[in-house]
Length: 564
Image: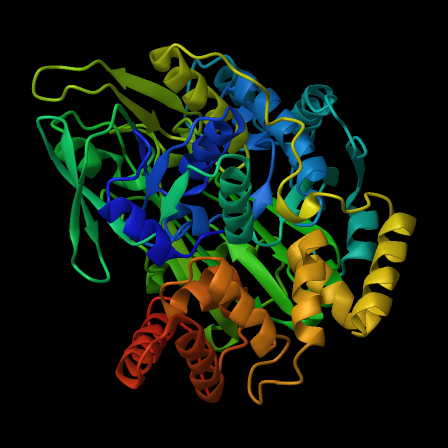
């Protein structure tokens, strides 16, 4: 990948594609990737870092959306399950099977109301017993047949469930088990899609920290948020994939109608060794007393992810998990895990984001569709380019969403599709053996070739897939080690700085690595990481100090981290 400054120079000299994508989250990048696969370059800009908005705040699941069956969105579930299965194959280094348990407190509860919701006679959430859930999971299995790699669901008794997971409530009637998928590092998948796009189509340009402004007579201003420099571009077509910011971007492009009605979802990462051990590889996906769906599952070691809330918010920058939300998340666990009492002292990391849902002024937030649509605005005299706006969208279906956007763009350009992205490996999944024996042999070869330990090679492969070989080669050439940064090396972070358009220190901490989610940040570690970034990116002492101060404020504030 070219560095950011090289792309800024191209922008300064007007050497840019005539397709502009506004929004560097998963759906904007998905469209960018699909267009590049057709040989069509685009200029993608984001006012912040790639995947720094809603794309950085998911439950870290790639799932079919079991609860969407309840609201009658069978087509969305079928599409999501197909895309989930494709990601298990195409991004096998980052997307892994996840065993899910649904604790059930009744057998027939909510059967009539569930049918009414499925038939869309009502959209108000209600209770769900074992029989309705069993029927839903039978459909889930059928819809997930395309490219299936995981077992079908099964039901078992509450007694058996409590034997396997002792903290579970003893008043359960049954437990349903099914499989979905988990993505270990969503932000890295976004970066790999950017790199894949630019490898396929070198004219493509993706720029973080460049904000799109107003348009006048077909010319759009772009603002470099680091230097304040202003550019103008004259696109042939614009895609608005800015997620929760869609309405504000529309305003700048002369369209006043509001289309987004966001809801904020907050998650906590907590440390509890006993509970992590009890849950093992299971995710609890459970119904709350207010008939919402919440979850808890183990990340790595003694850390667990628990969430989520669903609160209406019209502010796309509303990314703070509130005290009331923390209380809610802790409270909803108690009926399912009555002996577990999580406290604020156990919080390792908190994060939140605003879901860019279609505007819906009334009704329960859980009943708002998670599907997406494309709004196409034809050129008008004051805006002489067509505008394609993405409304909604979810992580799991980003590929098919990007495909639909690309098809809409190509229809305007009079071009036809050259290939599908459905069969394209993503980033580090390329040339990575899919079977356990092949993966073990590959890791052994990497260790022998690089001289690193097999354990270190396994860690790198978990982060980067086949691209671990590049990182391992860099580490093999350097004996430098951090004193206060565990699990990472200066060679690894230096490579990230050079190759992945790192612009701010927080890009490293929150998106290029999982240090924040891991709770692995110290004051001394920040200084060491800041020095690596300064060495690679040419920061002076003042810039380094500013970056550390800003990172500290963000981590201690919004993300509720305790940094020793």
